[in-house]
Image 1 (cartoon, rainbow, N blue to C red):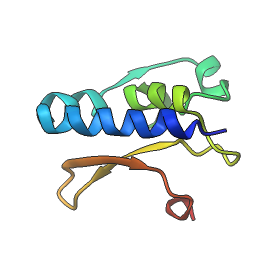
Image 2 (image 1 turned 60 degrees about the horizontal axis):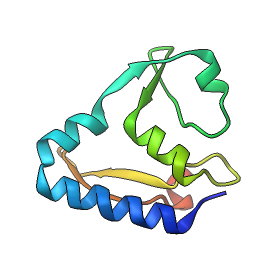
Image 3 (image 1 turned 45 degrees about the vertical axis):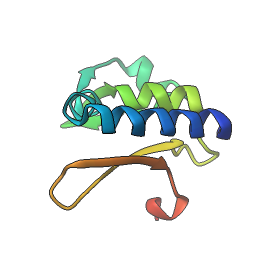
Length: 98
């Protein structure tokens, strides 16, 4: 279940931080740390698998706080432009996963 109020607050804060210091926020969001199978199996924390290795990121932790929908999709997405620059944070749309 998505906690909509929490997600809206988190998006507003993340976008404010991105405007304040885009470089450090981008680095933080793009950073991943190795994690365990137990974290992959955790139902509330989105974990990225890169080259067969589970990786945990800051946005995954934020999404664990905000919740995931019934299909396992996170509440918040980092939005990038065509050049790979982080431009904003937004509420995830189901249509993005089709």
